[in-house]
Length: 134
Image 1 (cartoon, rainbow, N blue to C red):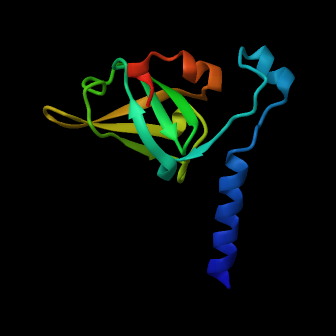
Image 2 (tube, one colour):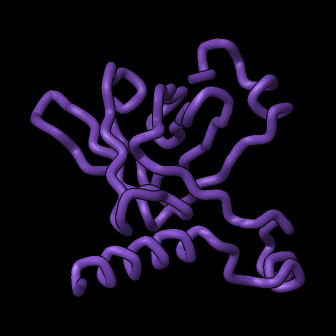
């Protein structure tokens, strides 16, 4: 019984962590768009591309693409054949502070902190150069 209550509580926290936390007016005042935060589960990432060492595009599911901006350059991320997206807040990513990218490097794996995450619109995805699309 106790483990069921704990599981339900954790599920509720995961769902509410992806809900918008500010009113549209608050978002506009902070310089953000009026769109609600959109979250994704790390297990749904199906591909990536890194046009440089500070930007990462993730394919999530079939049609969604998210852009991640790193806090600082993540060397060799743009050459990596595989990366790991690790969520620091469970299994979902809703904002930059929720994620860390693990990239293999010549001296071992490197952990790169993510500064910002945003879901691209279909028009933005189409505007990406062919080599930058995940």
